[in-house]
Amino acid sequence: MLLIQDVIKRYGALTALNKVSLQVEAGEFFGLLGPNGAGKSTLMSLVSGLRAPDAGTITLDGQALNTADAAGRLALGLVPQHIALYQELSPDQNLRIFGQLYGLRGSLLHERVEEALVAVQLTDRRKDQVKHFSGGMQRRLNLAAALLHRPKLLLCDEPTVGVDPQSRNAIFEYLERLNRAGLTIIYSTHYMEEATRLCSRIGVIDHGEILAHGTLDELLTRLPFEDEIRFPANPETAGLAAQLPAHGELATLDGTHRFRPRADYRLSTFFLLAESLGLPARLFTSQRPTLEALFLHLTGRNIRE
Image 1 (spheres, one colour):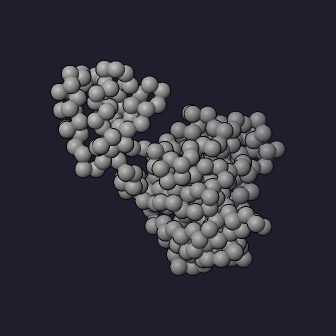
Image 2 (tube, rainbow, N blue to C red; image 1 turned 120 degrees about the vertical axis):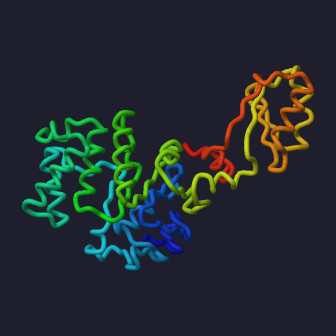
Image 3 (tube, rainbow, N blue to C red; image 1 turned 90 degrees about the vertical axis):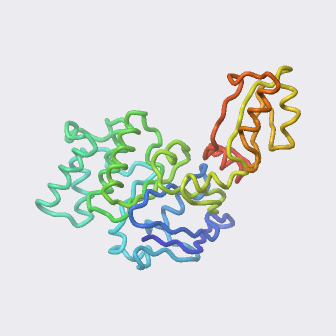
């Protein structure tokens, strides 16, 4: 559906995107995961046609997307990182203005506005000024505005920034319903839990480059370990700890050993060794790899930096 090939975007001496290539299929919920300044918003602005790439191509269903093709961009819906609403107007007025910009008129416009207000739970506040709304309410209204024209592809650029947990969950549930109904979504975020919950595939981006992409399970296979076993670092476990470096990676942090076995090392062997040393099972916890662990492995830094 969406094909991005060797896209480059520069701002003076800064290369914001460096030969980025991605393919998003129809019906996918694709996550773009990276820290602030990684290039997520720049890529969104290029796909939406707000900016033009310096090199490379972006096509939707085989047709080039560019800043001059307003008709082609009608297939897109954009939920920007910063609220894009008329603060002095009501939800009803905002939606009617955006609907008219998309070419909706008459009974169809009225129908779409009513559906949108119900979908984002703002019917009872439809006549109030947006400036009096909470951040979560404004985010939900912004999302509704992007969907009035029934786009093929919805672009969500960090749509939960500054949102309370209840509103965030409402946005998640609405997006999940839309995706189950067939809408293709690209969702940029720097929250691990959002990408994990929502996205069928994830692209990890940093310093303007796509470092890895795939399903969560596919991405986690890039880590050089399958599991992490944690246990206290004390004299009781010293004998066990001394034998582990030959079988994987052992690190100690805040009084806890963290053992990441090699792929060919069976966990049953570890627990048999622990049992032979008289160590009870309650000392050990096992943790599966996470997106955060993957990001640290790929970049050497925390995603929230």
